[in-house]
Image (cartoon, rainbow, N blue to C red; front, side, top):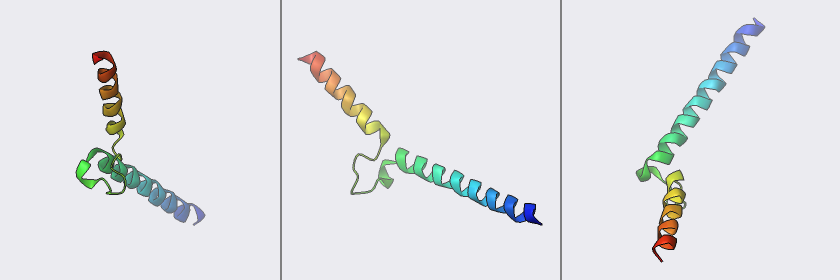
Length: 60
């Protein structure tokens, strides 16, 4: 009896964690879903800025 609801609770918590991780992955990789208040939401924005700065340094 005790094991049943505990296993069910753990399964639900694990599944919610998987869904939350998938949702944040989709949000991070889809620019159309980025919030307006956080234009730099994408993790690749910082990488592109760093690469652009490096190119500017070497070009000068």
